[in-house]
Image 1 (tube, rainbow, N blue to C red):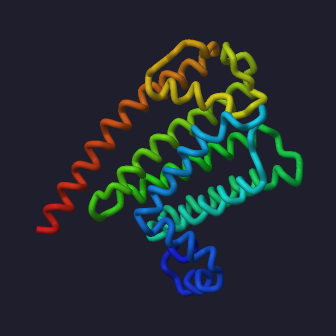
Image 2: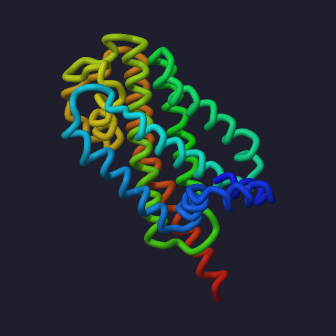
Length: 240
């Protein structure tokens, strides 16, 4: 978390003072954290939703845990100047809007828009940890899969935001009142280019987003596999 930003003395004192910060720092510093994060995503995306009542599915405790993971993840990229100067302020701003929506009225587009931005930051964090220097382990492969799952969730937020701003942008058994949850299924069907056809993009912007996601899925897999192979080869050469 903050102790990873610039490895400063102040950050180190904060980490020493707060055990939770130390735990979160270890979570992102160790490759095993990627596997744990992957498992959490699998549970959140595939296991829990069928048991939830209709609605957005947001809970204060879930948002707080999400915020801690995101801030610590961005902090784990702190050795890079961009993370210190840009990503952390953006993360804090988006999380302030999301958490603030529990205590004061916040327009739903703002909540979904900041949620979309925070997920993009999460994608940067996971990819940054997956593709950092070092040997390519099984945990990093799971990190790459976690990033793929994040892509599906990110597009679900984009579709939900559009459906809220442009009612009727999608035709089929989907309710914008359920928020991004309503579009997770449609997003992954589109990302994997399955396309069952039960939910259809009607608005021109919805169709453009659907096409972009359909292109993103195969490109991500092709580019990421090439990158992981190149990192593995480079790591083998360095070890010899």
